[in-house]
Length: 241
Image (tube, rainbow, N blue to C red; front, side, top):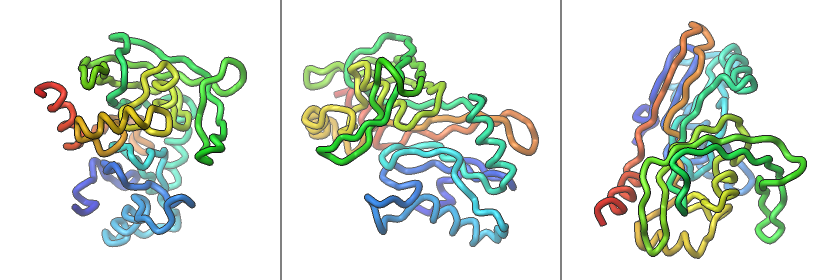
């Protein structure tokens, strides 16, 4: 599948892509040599005749295993405008996730997060703290409730009202309901059982939609990414056995 198959929206200012799970957005030291969405996007723009002194850049980040909406600014004006909207909390995002446990039908997670080093795995995690840290808020709505292997599983929509690193992952783990397949914040042994039972191959978190004010026209724009087939298949197995 080519990058053009993953384009959700494009104009002179923006390129919005449906990022596949398992693809890095940017290169990092832990995944040297792996292809990245940024490189693919720049190659696509170059092949399309895009020429600019400005280096296009993603406005936000998605983890490697997370799928969904990824917004690339093609101009300095677009990057500045969207960064400002993020800072002022004028951008609305919707995620969907399958989490372990039974969450309330509606709720708001308000937990301060602080970066802490897990020295056993040598990874930085965002951990809930009672004092210090940075305030973060994630509102959510439960869409469906399932049971598998004696565990209740909640299919939820999540609306991060702040934009902290790993916020959705850390917040659901912080209330005892980590995202299915998230070994960093969840229970690897339970995840492994669920992988075998449900055919899960990754963390089940998807950036489903984003809404913002267009940097050139001033109009509100909403872009949605369809739920990937692998996520849909897990839901089918839970619904119909």
